[in-house]
Image (cartoon, rainbow, N blue to C red; front, side, top):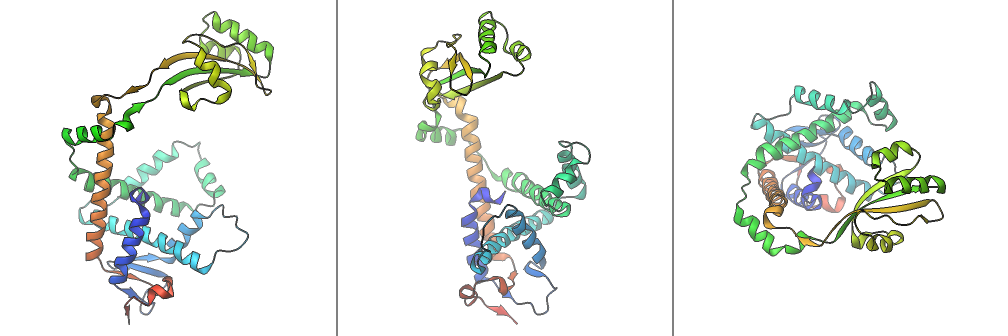
Length: 320
């Protein structure tokens, strides 16, 4: 989404450039229009829907101030303007999101829910289906813009990756890590039986079936991030060894160390894909910011001055 590319910077950039473009009042406009982006309207109901979605769980005892509302509406409007510009760019290139694409993506989402449950969940979350579809279309537009407009312009060569690796070695240091199992149950008798069975080489999946009420978790953690209650015992155990049965006052448990990995440094070939993706994302971010600045300079964007703070609107040239 747009926020991945430093939303605050974009908000300030767009706001600054809009002040130097033009603003408009309501005279002669279609009712409910809060902004025009190259003649294409953004409506008040879109602002309100986005604002309401952001504050579904708003629990403040006092209503927000006018200044706060203006600021939040301004940020939402910035987002909508950016999406509008992205959609227009896609349309020029013949890449706009089709109804067929939207329907296919919606069906993908619905497959994760039982029949008729998707609409029920939207209703429970107070989300209008049409609003959800509008947001889905924006998401698809954004993905297409990144993948089909910006990504083809990004090139990464081996030397760039090598230079990044040498300058950022600390990012590729892997501290000592341990993979281990935790068996726990409030029933001490079951824990004793599970420990005996495990020592007889019974597979973990078999133990899960044999003791369905027992909690059996596998962890793979850095040594310096181990919970204190387990750290001392785990560090003493060798791979394959089990701890004695312990009691943490909530349940009985024992630990099994599966594997210990020593601290190491990723080799360049191991880190290549990680670095490449990081460099790609950084170049896409830069290209996007350049595109925003260039597009805004050429765009005709008109904003309803009623949305602007008084001190800001004093610096804006209004259309009569």
